[in-house]
Length: 394
Image (cartoon, rainbow, N blue to C red; front, side, top):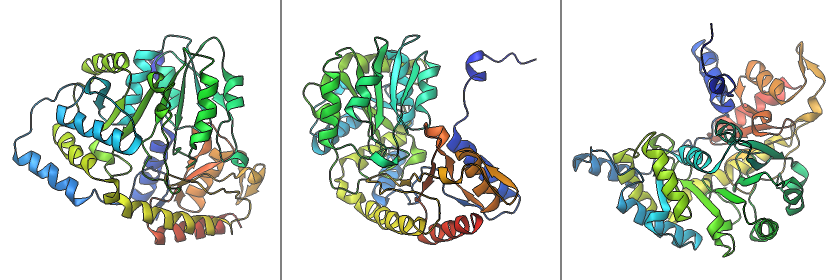
């Protein structure tokens, strides 16, 4: 008899983690699986960051940390926000968490009541919807497609707002599409929100530095949006520190205090050694990690060129992150090797089983016509993976 809570029984499994697990199972069976499913840089953490962690170990950092983060780390975050985003925060506005995912969960738990609506431009990061639902909120999806680079317009936002709308959550650069909202696009969104002063914004900027157009804009930079925006960031992507699990927010003081209170009852403070290393990471100028961004840009050109030769894959050029999000709906209703492709989930499973390439279905991101392909992989793996995909679809 299932005595688990309705909450967990109704919770979706993370599609990215599920695909990674399936790929691991097949590898254990001896299959040569190329994994292009996880959003994880394939670089090592920079040496100067690792050296800071080793120093922290040798300096005997081993005790519980403050719930909302070391003061020195908060200072580094404040400096980073000012240097990179022209945003002014104080220590009381910063909360350090065990990854940006926990930061997002904290926000949902302190901001949402049952029935509150949260607008999610589709595609959105896989966990947004379930985090909202776990905290009693109602996800409201705003559909976009490849024709407008998967970006929500101000008019679409206006049409989605109801008296129950509490928040807007979005990422830029976007996971999974790689889309980047320009200053003008964000201003148009902000102009809509000025008519609705009780709506708050979560701006997920975890891919901020993996940006190929030379400019990142934070919606909190607009003076009339600063007090209504929670800016979420971390070091997982830009610094290749996914396993270090450090994320943070800059937020209105009252929201930050609430997140601190919530976190104090859930995990308390984040890992002490990781926090010390992140001080060094954030104090460094972004030019120290430009080599990774440059390599991702080379890979973006490579994978888009290869996908151009795959019949039925429709692509655009993402401006950031390390994903392509091709529309593969041309295959819906077709049968290959005895398997019928009715949707993106079928396509992702078909490519895993027949091409030995792991991708992620767009269904998980709110867009059932696409699949997400990560190019956080070596050029050789990218070339071989697309070769296999092309062969499997021939």
